[in-house]
Image (cartoon, rainbow, N blue to C red; front, side):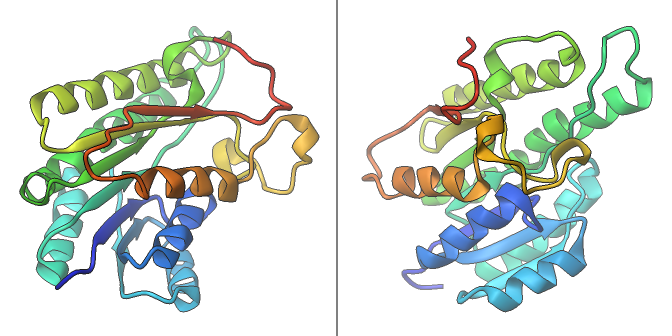
Length: 233
């Protein structure tokens, strides 16, 4: 493709991933959208004014990531931006959380991020591209009942920083939103802003601003929270 930037978004079927896909379409990116909910992706694609490839993607499986990335690279020839957004969350005291739930978070939030970046890294290096790793405002703090989830986000933060040191020709941004009004952790959208939740569109708009910066500007992290969420560090 000539003069058209290509963006990959994981976890793109709803919530923040969907909002980011919509912003990127408005910014004239060609899109490669992956998620486990292909039916939801189909609905999204119908609403986007952009060239779009979409397909099933389970970042907890290397075979799925490899298959998805191969199809994307065959379709577009390369990628300029990867938004690693897929994530899951289960909460409870460390002695109470199940082995299955903890493993699931490690597979998606930590290893899934690593698999996604690894699969597209050669193309990103070739095009001097950008990775946006969606973590959380808790990637540098802890709270009771969130130890298992938080540990995967601290690990994700370490991955992003190490990838940056090892690949200076690629720009890595850790996007660290606070609470967002989405389906995360079994929730449902529609919560009042006064309860401390950002809207996914607000986070996507913040990312739009960063992506418009000149290519020689590297923003390494952005943390944003609703003014209704208590500041914690």
